Length: 254
Image (cartoon, rainbow, N blue to C red; front, side):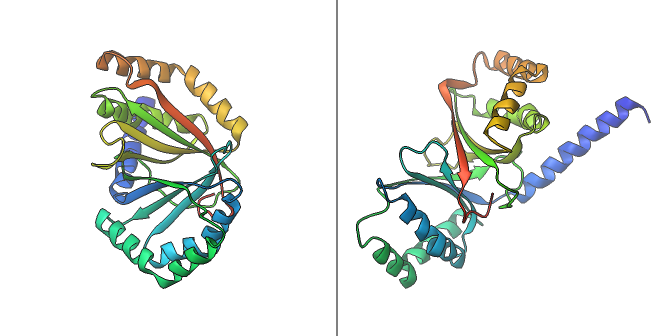
């Protein structure tokens, strides 16, 4: 068998594997960000550690990961849940809020004042190239939440670039692809946003990986071709946001 044929077969098998994985990943995800008052973030974590995570599981929610930004001036807790469907999500939260155990926990933990001042939430659907998201504990990693805002009409082109090039190049340069999502219809950023999470061995490793990625001729060619096709950048000005995260001690994904 010629080398060329081997390479072609490897590409075909790789695409098939990605397609098979994507077919399994049809859940609805929810990315939630809680803002805690000064001095109360430890109390918020304690509530999740001792009560909330278990109550989520009780009511059919899948706990994926819980993280704190490494640079966290706003006292944020970021977490990701999964549900079988949008309808299942609504039913789970309704049952959770009605649960007498939750009501008692909330009352007791807020005896000295609220421990959450603001909640941000967005419901997400996995892209067709996202790996199946598994809440694995793989050691003390650094995670990275990245949010891209596509320029007008270019979300499909942005997804195509990730599908055909970027995901594989991230892996080539030592990054772990955790998951890729677009906001569902009616959600903030729907139709223009790509949200994804990477994992790195460390902050230094993340910076080294991205430095090598940005200099990779394959990436430079893919970016140029995609922007030539679209007639310009696939993201708006300042449309790429990145936050480095560390998993909490109660996070299933580490």
